Amino acid sequence: MKIEQIALLALLVGALTMVGCGSDSSSTGTGGTGGSAGTAGMGGGGTGGSGPVDPCMGIPACIVCGQDAIPPDLALFLPDGIRTPVAFTATPGGAVVQGGTVSIAVAAEIVVSLPIMAQGSINEGSTSTYVATAGGDGTLDIVIPEQMLAGQDLVIDGGSGSADFTVDNDATELVIGLDSIVVNLSVTSPAMLDLTLDASETGDCTVEGDGVTIPVEPAQ
Image 1: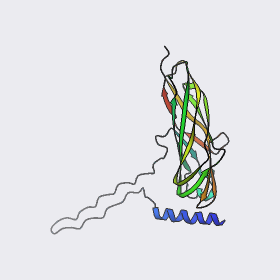
Image 2: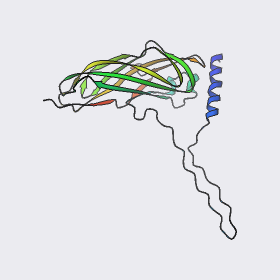
Image 3: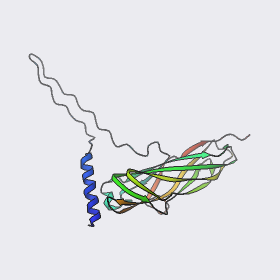
Image 4: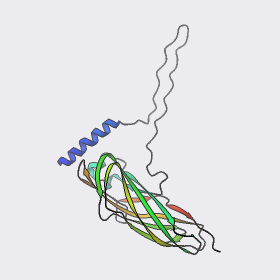
């Protein structure tokens, strides 16, 4: 095992030990002591623990990667893989009318949550594609800019851009969704490793989410 891998393993184990592990099982209270000329009290049962919160809940798009798509050094601590929210807005540049064409501007933010504090960067080749999934047609390709990152929740500027979308003649809403995305992340500290979230046609990850819905006005 490389020195960097040993260091990462030690740091991750230490971090998880400090945080501790939650339990979903119910706890059982102990019985009370009996009073004089009284009866013994009964302890109440504890409530069940809550499950983990989905970071993609309420978010228009999510990158879903199984454990096999994660570097082995990191996958050990992510047994369920990783779910990465992509929060994006889709703002029309004018009226969205049946049978018309409208410019849609998209801006995105991506949050990669790691099991330990880290430093890293987004590298060249990180891209995303947004499409009309209902109510129209159109495609927008956005380059995710290169940037430096630090923290446990790595907040990434997902880039921005705009493109023209056509609206169907009978549409009541235009839905813009994330079609594919590739995020090339290099972690430089506490150890060197590359984490590529590839939800393209050839990648090991997938995209979930309902996208952003824009109301459509009837044609005059």
